[in-house]
Image (tube, rainbow, N blue to C red; front, side, top):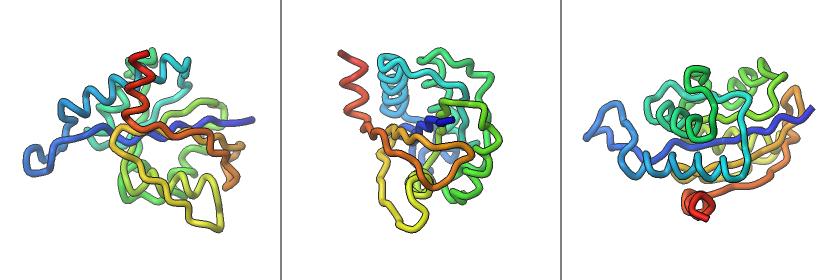
Length: 165
């Protein structure tokens, strides 16, 4: 069975100096709404939404979930999506949900780039840079191995264009 994984970097956030918890700023809130609308337009639905415990990632997950019709109270939170988490730990966590087909992960750099690389290749480091608000789709076999298939990567601007058409 194939699991479709949607890696989402949190939207633009306040600086640590302006807001120690780093909530999303106005641009970040707008990015997340546009991302959610774009994903809905693409007819993407999630069986599961998982977020880092950091507030900017939780806000991102909640906004996108709301836009695509996923119940916000069912969002799972895990430390395996924190910025410095190990991709192997994230994959181990995901292997608890092999009955799910479409999973959105809201997280941070450098984890998301490292996780994408780990999902796609065991021996070669693949470099993917996630702008704030970007979404990447990778299909993987279950249980998850290193043989994922890169499907697409959308920047915030591309998501905005999709949402507005």
